[in-house]
Image 1 (spheres, rainbow, N blue to C red):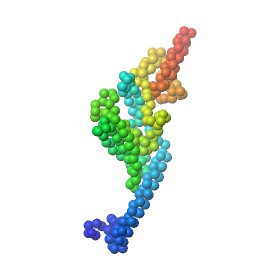
Image 2 (image 1 turned 90 degrees about the vertical axis):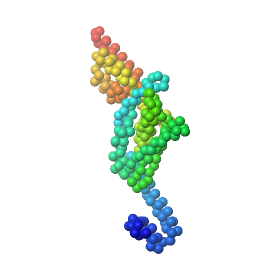
Image 3 (image 1 turned 60 degrees about the vertical axis):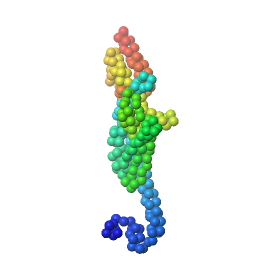
Image 4 (image 1 turned 90 degrees about the horizontal axis):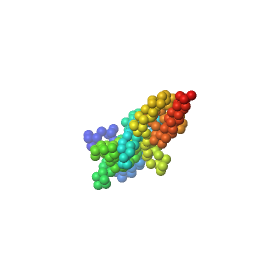
Length: 249
């Protein structure tokens, strides 16, 4: 036995049992106690590391604009933080605390192809915690079956990963805690606004400064949310009327 397993690679308890200082029953009980102790220490280390991680001032840029047709024939446009951009910020911070994130996707073909993604955050000492979400393949916008599966996996990876990191609230709606992406105006609406500004000699620079303040509060025309479109249109109409009055005087 000693020729097969080096003694310095064994637990001191196992070494004591091998030398005859402990019988197997006592060894079993002591190993159970040791395992519980080590698991508890690993759990405490995990939560301490996660608490330190969450002290970081996390700001995730919404780097992706998505536009697709709705089932009613309209078009939906919104901006969100992609998994790559989000984890690009989060991974170095997680690594500093000896934390690592992994994902495991599965598909239930007996349940309409339902896809489940499980995100797991693991500490170097071995303790891990998981978060799982499920959804049907997202086939909007004419996606084929493989694209629909890939889109859903990406969506679920993003939300499960951000949830474990404690940043899911950045993309949550207050209505029952359901996930909701902010909805932005369409590309055609963006172009329409720019054309109206140019046609009526309205300074785009001054218009952007107005957008940055209340009640719209956005940094560009592309970031105007659907619920603010009426306010923006009224602002342009007001600027056009003011310009027309000045021209008549």
